[in-house]
Image (cartoon, rainbow, N blue to C red; front, side, top):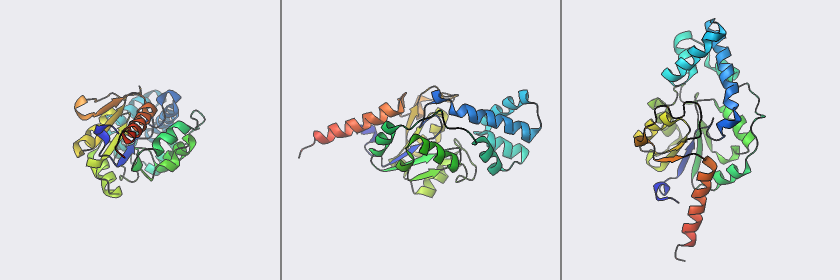
Length: 231
């Protein structure tokens, strides 16, 4: 394994636009349903809803956080509504399943979505069995990434030593708190919306543009290293 990762025994992955590529445009469906929910919650016109939705996302980390703060909505109602989507645009990925299975140590999903959505997506891709836990927005008490409390909740709930963990994300800004805790950080620079917002090389330890190729490279490096070790 690469020397930068030789100490890692806990692999933490974001879900949306990380474990599947944004080119599948799955999140576009969620985006449209968030906009529709904003119309319902605020009574605004449809052409205003997108501005409100994006404003809350950029200011609070999630649209949900803004709606809870300013409109006293039921988060369970919101999460069920926005994640009621069709998953036909993504397909099973046996290569990714094999690459994840080859990682040494624990594997966890850390998402601002909820666990039911995460399970549906993971099972659709065929990688659900590769993860021991999903730490979702409900588990954090609706505190979203990149708020520090979300990361503390993750580590405390799942007994994670940040110094032995890696966080893999498409949203660069979500890596800053992880880096501050001592995690190794990996930015998947795959063109997702606002993925480079808040990017700073100071808190990105590893910068890649292809998740599968990077994971396969880790496995190949481990195999090569083991073959070169003395018997």
